[in-house]
Length: 263
Image (cartoon, rainbow, N blue to C red; front, side, top):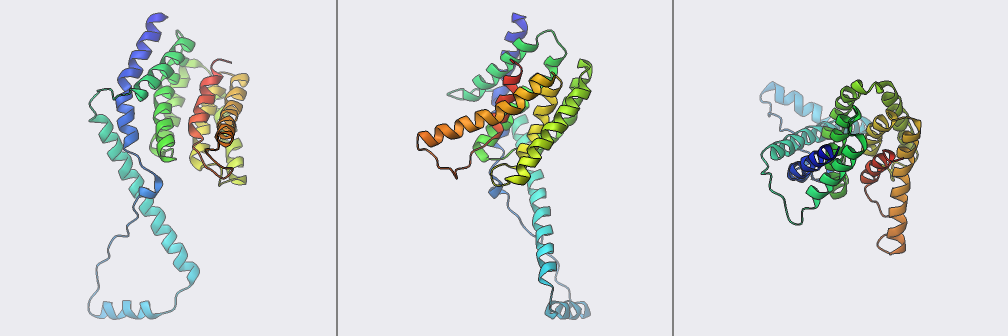
């Protein structure tokens, strides 16, 4: 078992620089520049028809919907391009630790804890993947207040495949669906206090903890909220924030999942 834990810690140390490079490739959502592609200028009779159409009154609701569709589509294209740049930067990264080696140490500790908990079981592969992807998401969310779909969405099928050998895929899917639903309700009630990225992340945590049983699922579901609330209270007591201050919840949701393994 000690060899497995040491190997997992070494994996975390080696993966740390790549995770840091991946995280550095994502910026705040405001950095996603929305540009409308230029349209060719018509000439001749076609230009007359376009000019007449431009002079015709337009329904404000239609204009608003068209602008919203343009903005949404452009933002999605910008997000995909940002994700491609981030993953290219990760692949080309030099595996050299930074100083202080915060990312490397953090990933190594999480991987070692997961290996210590699941050494010799089929769950180890799923949780090691979750440890690496979760550390990347935690760093990104802490820096940018975002949880990129480029990491969360592919993690669903990856975790599903890795959970198959455990024999607990059904429990994992049920747990993921239940926790997604719970967070979706909270997001619907308080969209200003919870991002939709947190809802998608909760589904992954629900899959992992649900595969371990109801007790682990309950701990994972409640621990994330408790740790987030504890951090908020600490900020208030130290007067580093107000009741309206927003902070990333993703890292605390992930810490709740880790806490569930030691229930």
